[in-house]
Length: 377
Image (cartoon, rainbow, N blue to C red; front, side):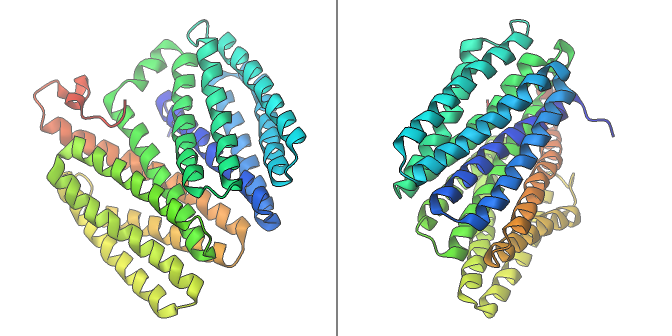
């Protein structure tokens, strides 16, 4: 099936957000001195860079890629150099890396603005890229200082910021007919649900890694998962009301607790507790499927939803298993797969949610943004 420009724009947002996460993880692994994780993280970051460069070529043509690819790869190298300097307490090298990153921001913002026929403002693009660099260097500094709460707050800010930069670029660089599609309510709903669900995946992986390894950043990681859950509950409230959102939040919270419990049991070698957590997840999958099927007027069947959530949870469990075994290459492969799965699920949910909300509105409501209920701005 041919993908529309809007579909590809969601893909671009996904890759930008994923870059932020992978870059932060690669930087942190250098600060920890975890050489095995470094290799797997670098490979995952390289795969993301290749996918992003290819997609930029599909969306915006060869003129974009000719300059974008080398500059983007160069900024990845400097981010890694920055983290290595932080780890080695080498202030001179740290400042050299920052200076190279500042130069990257300027050159890439000029290139992107130049391709947009005036639709992208160069100072605004420069500001957005500078914020991206500031996020990643700031989280690395905080992580090295063992201020995990600050590091994880910025980690989350960095993901959400760069995800949104993908939309800014698409809106500035795509032809007029394609940009109009980006403003359709159902597309905006897909985009924002994709952001929140994929962030859920990233943060659950983050907290389960901390649980498996019993690292001191566990509490900070758990706080970020809770913040993401609040965002998802707020989205459900905007779409379906507070009562539905409250019930959803209770079920969703149970599923996170079971995933974390599994990871803790894995660290302790408690097979009985692992089995109980898996049983709890199977119960959750049935309950969330029945709940969402009812909320959407059976536009998505409970069987289809149960299968989707079972796949989601199964991948997260296998990710924890691989991480516990220090098979970081497999853990990153699984993380990539479940991240992609989050966007597939978001598309199905957004389409069903949109139809459900539109059916309850006065005629023409869907064309006015579902009465202001679409997630995000």
